Length: 231
Ligand code: SF4
Image 1: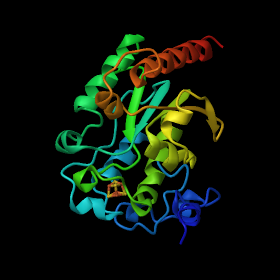
Image 2 (image 1 turned 90 degrees about the vertical axis):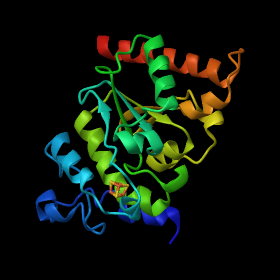
Image 3 (image 1 turned 120 degrees about the vertical axis):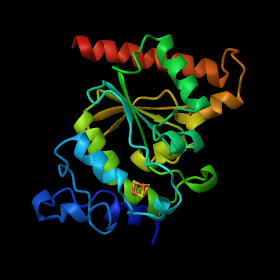
């Protein structure tokens, strides 16, 4: 089955499905049970399901399920690809070198990382050797992510890197081409940005370099959050 067809049928279940008709307790153990919109009453219940989840084969190789960190009422929701080694060990997203750089980037425009952002990933369990998650894994996990977005209800979603962009918005263009562009998805404002790991591999701060471009993008995000907060 083509990627697109698969995602149509399995991403998060039919939006028209009545949550009360779904076998709620079977969600973490049966990947065929859809995670339909509105099924979770709160993020705590969702987290409990995630931490016992076996909907895809990543459950067999993970150490910890990595659900989120940050504020559940944050105006900015940041989505990465998946947990790396340190995230897997600690059970928190973006805690390795990439995470430290992300903190610095956010703090540079005075975002409070405890209050202003909620951070999560496309898949909640580490793919072995940090490979890109497969379409099957992304779709098994996607319903959780869609529910996190619904419950946090952010003003802005930042997609770090090509996998996050493709998995949520279906946009397959390279991140260099589309970073910094405002996009609309499901009535929400989104911006693709470079993944911090990419910035770590490209240390130049010269005008036009990835780090310089990230600085432009995060300033645009800060300005937009302020604009939306005033309105
Ligand atoms: S990656 Fe997502 S769907 Fe797969 S086992 Fe982990 S929490 Fe469940």
